[in-house]
Length: 407
Image (cartoon, rainbow, N blue to C red; front, side, top):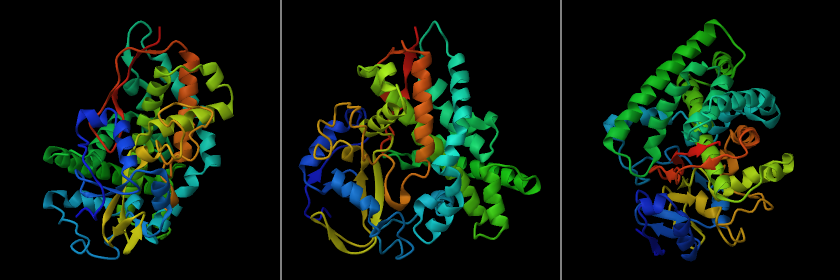
């Protein structure tokens, strides 16, 4: 059912697409405000105006089964082998609408406001210096693994109160879980995700029980206290919230950092000028987030029958919002393929918008500001050693590795 819209065909698992989707987005822009993406089988929006509007429009949501059953929404039955994964996901604020979403988000929102996040600056800077101190000085190395992966997972682990020596295990669980959202997932990927979810959940439950016995000054203890105080936070919601913060709190930031370093090294830029002060640094970060964001596609359910941007939409339908394409809409950004620090990526939708705007955006921005300025301050001659290759994980857009050398 194409809704009589233009049809676009592009395989997200084709290297010709996921290595550089931006020429495809330019073709999508020409199709009009809405089109049918054949490979996904739903209506998509690639232009800035529509994407930004839908993100904020309460007639679209992340959840549909609160107002209609799966059959009426045209959703397939959940396979038995995936039931435990989706039962877990049902407790995540990312997948819920008000009033449940409002309650869950309120419980963690205070920890992520900018004035609280700024207090982490000294610890993040020390971490960055420690990681750079460990770089090899006389050979090329993978900056993605040695730096970009380490910063976000250690910071969010510290914030939650998870031991740092669990960082590699957290990364492994997270990668396996978020692989469920890539286009070309297989049964093996699904089985790994189910197993990782169970192990991750058991680990968080164990930590939560420890916080009950021995309260601490961290976010996980705060979630436990909320549960004990009867703020309608169940143990399943506590576990799902903690894992969401760990996964979302570092997964996207890893690639935001990696993509930004790649972008900067491939373009002529002077760290002394671009990172001269807080304003110029802000512009660098926002323009890097605009030009090559870590998340390119996010979906919404249609919550009521409507006509939107020339598309006839029915309650229960899924629609796709192409964040990466919206950031490259020439009607919004002049010469969108060009890196322009003066515009500073103003208004980009890389963090979403509306009630599901990324909770961790202030933390991600702080990690990028400190991580990038410290890296290029310490290693002003950093250079690429190999052509960076993106991973086959669309709708995520991040590198497999980032080989660099500092001398």
